[in-house]
Length: 94
Image 1 (cartoon, helix red, strand yellow):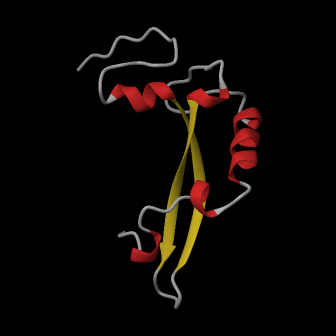
Image 2 (cartoon, rainbow, N blue to C red; image 1 turned 120 degrees about the vertical axis):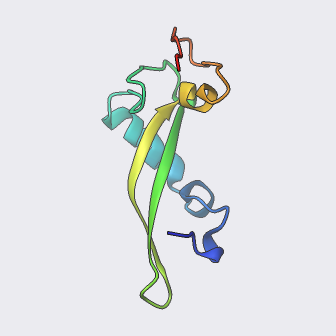
Image 3 (spheres, rainbow, N blue to C red; image 1 turned 45 degrees about the vertical axis):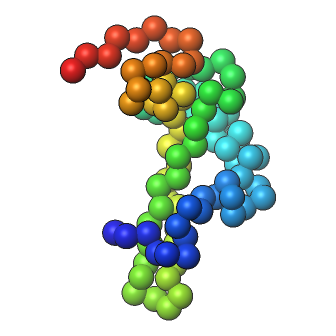
């Protein structure tokens, strides 16, 4: 589904003042574990909280929801470039 134009380049981080507290709470509740690689980064700053949005365009206005937030470590960020960044040793193979 396409992202509605009003929400282009938007995220909970930019739209909601309580985002940092929610992110920190999710990291602690989920045991400080990267949900992609299973690693345990030491610093909270090594976590990304990726929002998975859904949109109901059958209503006017469109309703946007965030049904899921996935915690990922900075390895996820660097994996596309082949550069793990959170102090873990990984071998990437194809």
